[in-house]
Length: 505
Image (tube, rainbow, N blue to C red; front, side, top):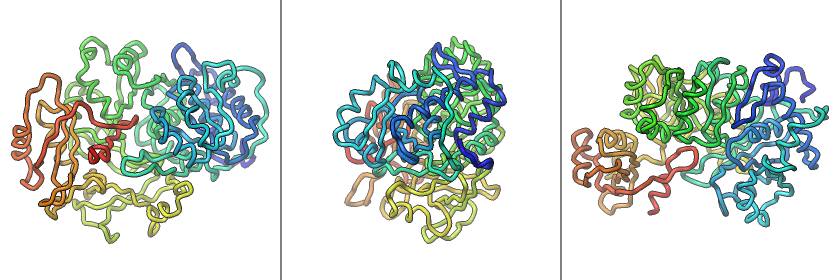
């Protein structure tokens, strides 16, 4: 713990909650529960176990596992031990796993035993000296965390210290490690609590991956800050989500649109009582407006929150609140408490309201830069602002609407087309389950607007019908020249569409 009485660290968030609510249940995972006092003590024991490995202040510790109480303890223990947490997507294998371990320089890896085989295949090529099971083993971190005396830690942690390398999802290039200090994340937790009305009695269910910034930093940690009792699932399994909402009277649920969409069509929805659910949050990828309106129509008393941002800002930057959805269903809302925005053209000049431009951020939530990548850091942080790479519009009241990622804008015949606009038009066709619009090389058009479509089960529709459908809704230059039908779209574990894979197939 820090000797500075003014320090505001990630693990200090839990420590204060444990002082306020020592006997309240903090975390439920399967048949295990931890009170706030038990969780705080477990974190201290686990931090001592990590330091006993010989790790020094600032050493990186990778976490390679699915959601569990052990994963939460591991993150907080790394923070309390003065180390740097490196969350790794549990779906990564081989070269991708090796790259993150090597680029971060992780000296230790916390791993689920079920994933240990994947790790063993790359250990010869990475700098990790220590491998420690997270759980389900006698020598696991969780075993050490839940037994024995609570030691005194001789560790001094400042809120300016680095606490996490939060790797970008790498949808367009190699992942970059956003360097997050304690104070950036604690500011982000406060923004999340205020913007999303998070409260101790929400009874939240957390099931999106905790290696992703949204699950950990917008919901898990802010809910621990307010003293909520959190039910944790290993993964977003739709039948289990619906069962728990009913049986545990869940009041708050965050899902990526890629989970909300199939959940809205799941047969169990007809038999489950979801009346306890009061808050529904979505984010991490774009929610089709037609799908959102279908959900809002079915559950008129449920408050929907649109969460938007990116890893480098912790990740929450803007929120569209429930009462704002009626007038602006396609907007991602306004900047949260600790975030300031600008919308600029390619020359860095502010654009008029309603015109598209890149959204820039200024905020104490921002990362310090990219780990061992000064060129990317200099490119992102220019002229006193962070350049997001997102193309948006902003209206006179400050509401942001995402147009596209700048790299996903299609140049067709010298005219720029936002892929999201074409995707929204296609989603209005009843046969379309999922769609991604990309630009493919074309001698005449430079890039041809191309739709990659997943059809609903049993749907019978051809390329011409979908093209004609878009023609009735958009200008001719925005209409797809080509339609490709596929069984699934490539996505990472946080639900983000990997358009780069579509462009190379």
